[in-house]
Length: 349
Ligand SMILES: Cc1cc2nc3c(=O)[nH]c(=O)nc-3n(C[C@H](O)[C@H](O)[C@H](O)COP(=O)(O)OP(=O)(O)OC[C@H]3O[C@@H](n4cnc5c(N)ncnc54)[C@H](O)[C@@H]3O)c2cc1C
Image 1: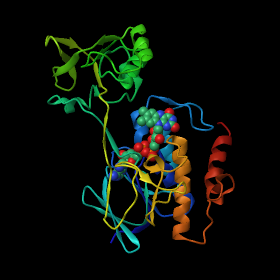
Image 2 (image 1 turned 90 degrees about the vertical axis):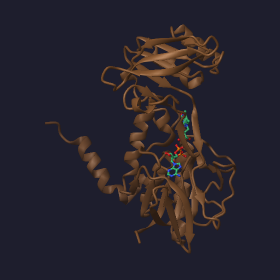
Image 3 (image 1 turned 135 degrees about the vertical axis):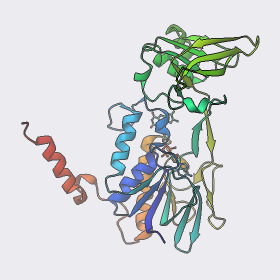
Image 4 (image 1 turned 45 degrees about the vertical axis):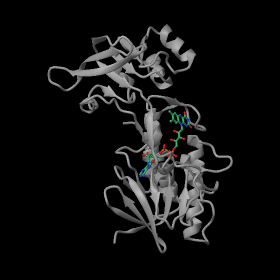
């Protein structure tokens, strides 16, 4: 049998990543399983957005914030596995057996659910062969503004995210065109006006019907659009295609029949601010956890994570302190502090 961990965290978003750090701080043998190939959770949906509402943190890009979260999560060397979707949790006496979609099993004394609101994926363009351009110029999120500089861009979608991207990209792009299948955009009026003021071309009742490749078949060069009412088509040369058709959500995991956890609905579990659920040994943190006074923001995920890990610590070791030692006076950081200070004050040569 594989090693039995003290805690297995399911989900590598902000709640899971901070839990991995805090769990190390509390001396727990920790494993984290994330279904996506990348860590970061929902923040990966807004890598180019500045986040302002994290206490004491200057405005930070989503992408940079994810990097920092990952670095912090690795402080105490937890085992982290990406591309590992958990689909079932079973209890065998005092041990949880965590089954993955690939048929692997992981063993743990406790489980910390940090699965957000389920697995969120962008609604993809349903045109044949579209997926092969995802490595080149078909985008479902804007990862970096840099690649859009001086480009002709077409954005498919009429919601706030689509129009927001159009507004942000228009000052740096050569041209931005929005196509939307319905008569009226669903984005806020003020954002639509901003897009119009920024020179974004908006074509309603229009849908993308064909993507045609460049000569070496690596990227989209031409996009064919059709007017949904007149059925007339036109083809346009384009550098980048962005699709913003919303997200689908998949309820994340199942529990063995013997593990009953009250759920708020298909996506969220009811629990306490301490991270405890109705099932001993199963804890929760972040967006997945619902309780009175819950804050569904990044700052809320951190408080949830620390609470859940402290609950796990006292569940495993009832005589342990309820709270972890503050980091500023914690011996665990002594060596790391020394090396940071040495680097900071090293004489310049
Ligand atoms: C567009 C947008 C903008 C936002 N802006 C802000 C902001 O400015 N400030 C702020 O404070 N908050 C913001 N938020 C909210 C913030 O992103 C969330 O509160 C936060 O990401 C929740 O973190 P989490 O770890 O609980 O869940 P998530 O970030 O959803 O992470 C959950 C992780 O679990 C993984 N997972 C799910 N199921 C499984 C499974 N079965 N097996 C393995 N892994 C699984 C998922 O793939 C995901 O990586 C924003 C949210 C959105 C959508």
